[in-house]
Length: 370
Image (cartoon, rainbow, N blue to C red; front, side, top):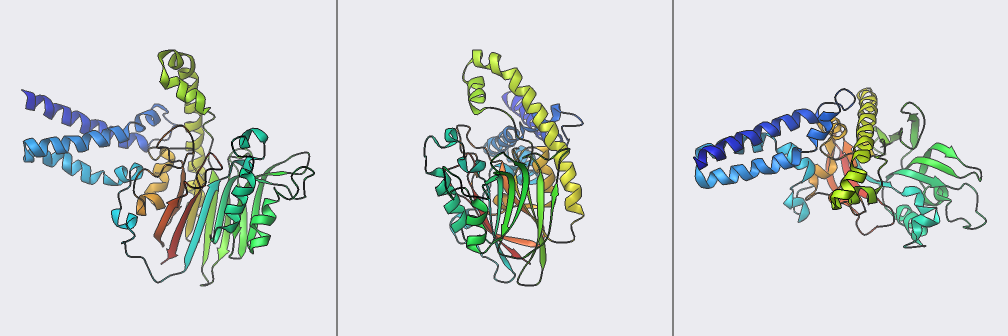
């Protein structure tokens, strides 16, 4: 009787897992409840592994079913919890041939230009810009970028970030401006490159906001041309405190929960539309692609799934662990990613937890063009 009940539970878990995988592939713009089902995928994956272990101790013949499902769904498991112990130990073989490209991607939160963003560390803007500028990366992609073309009366040359990261380090710059304020300060995104930029462009989602995409074609020393995309998908528009309050008590859930769900739904719908727009652009690229993004979405989402189906995620390829990139109270949140096409070999990928100046941790990677 107990075994019969356990077997039925195993079948239910497998069914749940398959439904969740199918839900990941459904854009929220066509059926938004699927996005919430997709978020349960890591739980289903974990329970299926637990079922496989349980039946290995009880009946190896029955264990073959959840074990086979675990093998077939392993790529989905790797999306949220990568396992590459050889890379972690530095023992994995690295490619020796091919043009090497080092990449840095970071959401820099406008370099904490506003006083309330630098209350904990008043020197954080200078520290952040210095760290980015001194990084050995060949290509730097920055989201939520901020630049003051002229010295400020209060901050001097502190926020002349285009000059400090670009011209002073020998990098070319493509700045995609979304706003220029009354003092001439520029907001947007930026790509810096030690390689010549031979073409550039901006992709808007309905209208030009901080959530948009940009690309630059770079000519490598090998003579190859690559296309780098830097994009920032629709923000969740949810305050971290509201999220924490919603699950900390029943009163908080009642007061905050419904509003958070509505905003979460709107964000998921917008990101599914934006991702479909970008995928059409990616398909038209004549060059090997390298993608840097603040997805504002988890690895078990439609946006991530579309990218993972066509590109290599750098963390899932060589990382070990969750690889969380959000610097806040919400744990295990990886929303900042780098992806590359099949023409690339991923040698290394790191999340820089030692650089806590923004609400996102920077990521760096090393690639080789095959």
